[in-house]
Image (cartoon, rainbow, N blue to C red):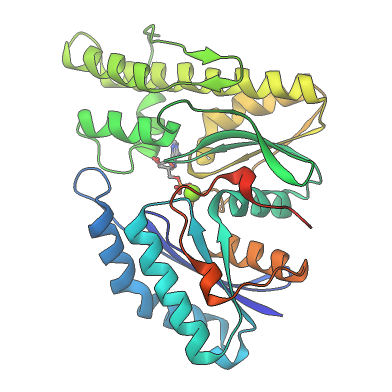
Length: 323
Ligand code: AMP
Ligand code: MG
């Protein structure tokens, strides 16, 4: 079975094509905002790039629409205009080419690609992206959220700090580079509440410290990473100790960060657990959407066009996991 997946929840238009466990195409086009992500501009970007991206994914795989057995797309959570653009594209393709369609949860797709590429069975997952920060485990037929951010996602915090300090979007990778040159640790708010987290205070405080002109950007980036990643590691460790699991999975765009990987790997090791990160597939991509669509289809999930309504606030634990 060949599945074509379309990702488009925010900044990335991703087209992935898979056949079982083989990746046949992975085309990603990323919107570069001037400041923060503007939902309407992002949606326009996705729409404008849809045809070329589809063409190049199909050409790269040496396939035509006649070869595609399933169209999967990101149904939510995400920015409404982006979700509607991608869903409309997916519906048109499905109706025109008479291919079954399936809308999937973006966060569950991040987990499943991680599980698949790391060969994990029952991991504790730390999912960290722009808009989301969650600690999850499959429990009684759903990915239960054991902890999450109470305000903004960690990636959003890093990107907003970048915007305040003149770093281009996305700021996460730039902060990682600058942090390596940081020498002095500057105390910033460390907010952990049980297994929940909050990042808005650290953003305000780090921004104020930057504006005061008393601290270097390198030291601030270093301290921002050390503080917020320690928070993430602490809550993941608490959940791991409580649930006594043997696998820790890191996924989502912020999972690209080597310092965060290092901290979590060390923590997992101390608990006798394996650590894994889906290298190259942490950031948004179409392959993960194709993979989850295929998994759900094989598990018997079917959707009509009416079922493909977008869900901007689609929660990870709303998905019934029957696979
Ligand atoms: P996603 O939506 O899952 O693709 O994640 C996007 C987020 O990941 C953005 O907030 C980026 O700033 C962040 N990000 C990407 N690479 C890195 C990195 N190396 N370090 C920290 N954050 C990163
Ligand atoms: Mg994402």
